[in-house]
Length: 291
Image (cartoon, rainbow, N blue to C red):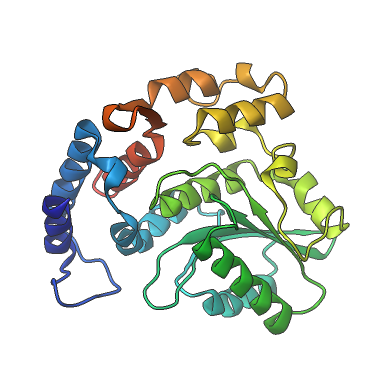
């Protein structure tokens, strides 16, 4: 872990005694980071290594890259929940009907990302915060509470806001990668999200509390679950969506279970299997910055 942290600090200009917000790296130093990440996966060190800080440093570049690839995705990086208000008001003022926001929990250099999806339907504004883990955990709960308070107090009461939890993440620091991947899915499959937004507007559930994954699963395509880290969680989704186990979820013509099996890693000292898909996705995202 120390070698990786040292490589990261050297690559992004982060001294051992100082914290900085901006990421400044060369292609050579980024290649060194990628090599260290790949070595972590190969040696199974990824399971006990914390990557949230480096993801936070890289996220401005990753979001910029995503917007360059998908100009109409309208993805904005928000480092503190309170900073959501101004760019969202500008989005509405411009008449943009659909946008996304990667939002960090903030507060004392804490790192935890969720993603907000916005759709305006029939002149009604729907905002949905997607949480990759569960709101039962401290940082997700804090992010949810902050966003709910900010939207209720700083934005018009005509906005319909809900919080939904996907419960697909099990590792400790992949929320940024999960949220970035979800943001892209929310854009690319926005038409399949309309039912969720319409039901949010119509109040089909209690918007003052979270929407559990038990209900959410019925709204989302199986491709949203590509990086799910638990086999049991995948099985729960498929039980609610019969036939989804046979759908192709990527360009390699793999089903969700075929893809899960391909990314499965065995941790002998824990007698445990876990998907390394999100960790490999991080490597892929970082590599996209130097292509």
